[in-house]
Length: 516
Image (tube, rainbow, N blue to C red; front, side):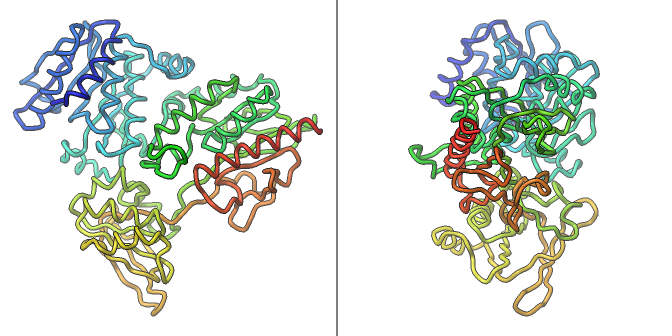
């Protein structure tokens, strides 16, 4: 099952097992069942702390592998073959079940241990989804830490009947105790905040007595990480608040224009960014959303959080980034995660052999069309303008594909559905005003970004697009408040540009501090 190189790597990881673990594989005679059993036997053969039991009589899901500390009931299950992006989830589950400690923040682990009600998580994934492993690994860790919790990864490609029955059209899709819990990327902190009724109060209490920062960075993407590093290197008290570390980069698959690195992937770069920030004395506060910025009576800047806590700082750097722009047409909100998608890499496999539409003819839209063309039956690209905005090389590739159709001057007017899932869309031909219907099962929206600046509308000067106006030093209209990255008027929304602007804002803030 495992190639020699991968087996060698896994062998090295499994040397870290502290305690014995047990694998139980449920089989049903199918090819996938045989494949999972071969994988389990490979794992068993690598370490004498691992034992394997084969269950040929199970009435539950098969094939599936249950991982448990020796002598305990298994609480972590992989239904399907945990390869592809989920191989890392498998390795971590093996190690953590065997007593190897997690690198997650200790406070989050203690929060997971303290949950008292029964929580049974089911996470539907596709093995090509780069966002799914974060969710799988989070609930797996919760299950390993707490006997009241179980976690099951379910490969939608193997258990297609379940996917159809539950009408799953986006991954990861998370069910809790049989009910839909959420769709899309979620961190451990975010999941804990949703299941822990006292999470907000606990977080607010923990933040209430924080001393004022010299620099408080709002946002944990490339701009925020760069700002934090440059600030901390000046030896000043630095804090970072972020809903999740990494921002949009965490959702990016391939990155080939990051100078000095020919190729990397979003999650890997995010992990490296966080590790770099942690090398300095930076107070990182995750799963925190800023809702207001104001001048305090004591002359300090105040940042109010969604949980009610207020943090103070002598200067603030806003690096809140941007989010996917929505079409804002009838039916879009109703059919989100029911056919309306924003990640072709994650959700594309769910539309195998079906017709889909891509909204947008920029680089993101044409790249999505090219990726999807190898999976789906037909891709219809709708571009609002009279020409495509993508790079010529991408346009030529898309136009060469027999199952890609490009329609220009097309304004999407409505998402159609049957009450449960997308069935099509309507668009108006801007040249003739004629309205047309396209029958599709999926719609991938790729029309750019919206700055995350809503909470600043009455506080700072914003552009007509909602971007924060900044000067060459990153200074905003409020003295002592700086901004960097995609949330600003910076014309090019690129990772390396955001990092540079983050450094600029940090240096600008430091200059402000020493002069004021």
